Image (cartoon, rainbow, N blue to C red; front, top):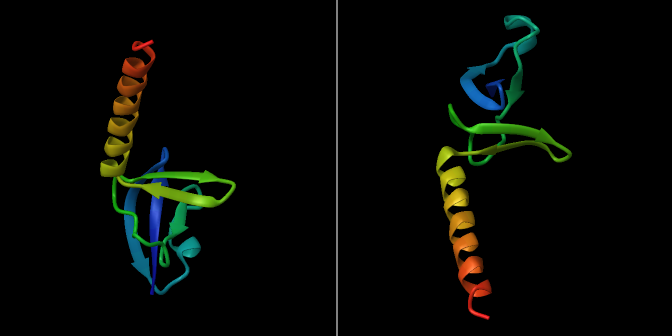
Length: 84
């Protein structure tokens, strides 16, 4: 059985598992991506971006953490540059 993620505006909108041919089950305008072997498995509301390495998924938690780390780095750099 394969598991697919339906991608809408770079977000996982739906998950679907089937043994059938997904291209025959849904309208061709819907974007379904095979995530059967993706670890960790993307979940609904994860971001999905297609690039040179294929599909890359990230959880909302990792996006928040990344944003927090960037904020802390900016604060640290601002403090470091102000100590001259």
